[in-house]
Length: 197
Image (cartoon, rainbow, N blue to C red; front, side):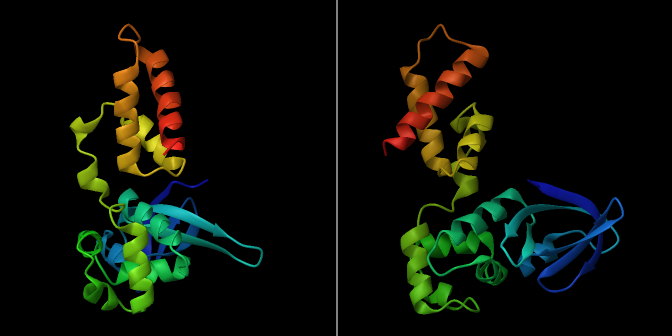
């Protein structure tokens, strides 16, 4: 499916961005914070996307970067939060602030986000505490297998857990393995570790 769309930004309307590429103008729902992070109207921009496909409707959701899209996908796992609700939440609080509020269990800050009541804020803390620290959890030196980490994340595993599993798998590998064979073994063994958690 679509990973991202690159084109000329034709309109910014609160939590909607319109982007033209190859003669097609895309109408993409985005958190207001992400819309503001894009280049000005008339310039080229890149929007990371996620497609919601239901029987009665197809809707394209967009994000300024992959971390924001990952946050959106984590929010969707929380009971009672749908795509539109996740976009509204993300439009009312920045990435770092959201991560900090979850880590510190700052219920007051979460309740201040428009459309986020006490019960949903509590659910967010229970479901997502420790899961949204994407950037700090993945320093470049943490693992030389960034592609494998991304592949595991694409399968639904948590970034931190994926890195830990790969590091554990590498420690258990025969030292004479190298190249693509080593990567294949690492990937398989990491999935074994992750599945047994």
